[in-house]
Amino acid sequence: MLNLAKKKETFHAVGKRKKSIARAHAKRGNGKVFVNNKLLDFYEPEMIRLFVKEPLILAGKVAKDLDIRVNVRGGGIFGQASAARESIAKVLVDYDKNLKEKFLNYDRTLLIADARRTEPHKPSRSKAGSRRHKQRSKR
Image (cartoon, rainbow, N blue to C red; front, side, top):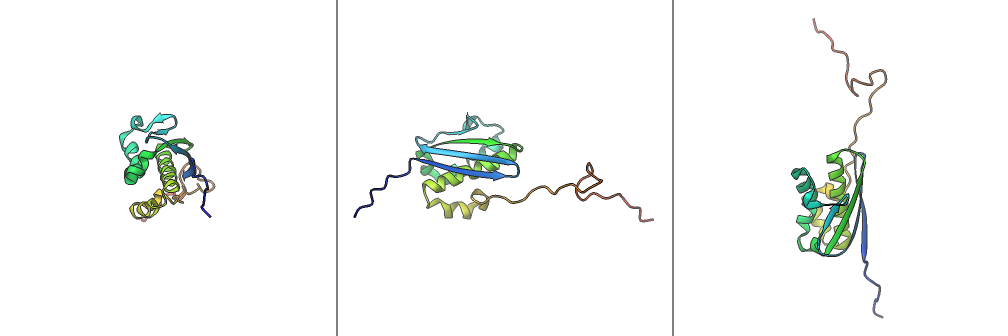
């Protein structure tokens, strides 16, 4: 018997980096990408824009078939960019499974969250930092 299951129309993915969380929603369209309701082509600074565009460039024609909306909250500008980049890559892989190997070979953090976090400050030295000690004189 033929498999008459309906193809998925929408795709969802979540990307995380430090305190930032990005949620990407994609549907069939003509390749528009919005980050926080702002077209990606107008996203500033340029370095961050190019960083977020990497999965789209790697995907090539596949990315032109989807309209992607990304909502990012929390963290700083680079954490948000990394989270958005990861969520876009996950949505593209959800749409076309052949991209997974390509993304992993290019940069593993496109699909796998970076687990690094800042080290908590130790007691009684809250302003100094997590590993800061009093300077000692050798003589």
